Length: 228
Image (tube, helix red, strand yellow):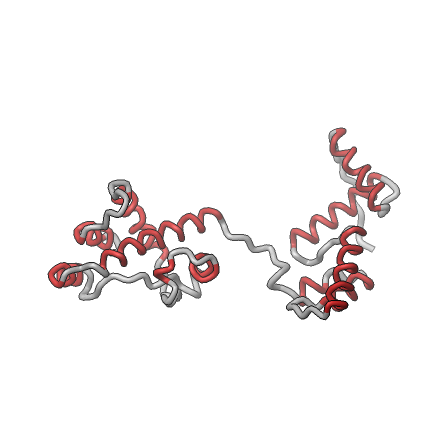
């Protein structure tokens, strides 16, 4: 048996009221100290993604939904009988093993989302201008870009997985920045640092662009110049 250690814990009246309400509603603890231990255990398990926790109401709702699904013979991706067995047996760890795509602790960082949106917005304007280049402008831009016309190549699937996932979701699932719908999002090399420098150069230029106004070739060259 693991050694127990006594901890001093001070809780305000509102917090104690919430604990008392949980004890009354759940019926799972006979004292505040036991309730706190159970709530800490529930919180740690949820935070670590090792188990799910369902209230009695959650269990009843799920069983009723399962009965409806089976009666209507609805086929879906979730194995309702498997989830029911985890509830009957108290095997709340099982869904996190079986359905890892649903039960995980990952969440996109807002800063990463903003960065990817800025990158896609920048490349959307660059590629829109590239489509309108005259032959002379095309040669000028190629000369400044190692002989190639600039094109969004995505993010590195190995080292920038979070960024490539956000970009893919924005374009493929949310149908934003439709210009990139057929693009390959895996650059196969790290590009985030380069894109960040380009975005920093692009931001003051963006402020000068009115509605319907395109980037100039010179502005694109200036943005690309910070890559190196």
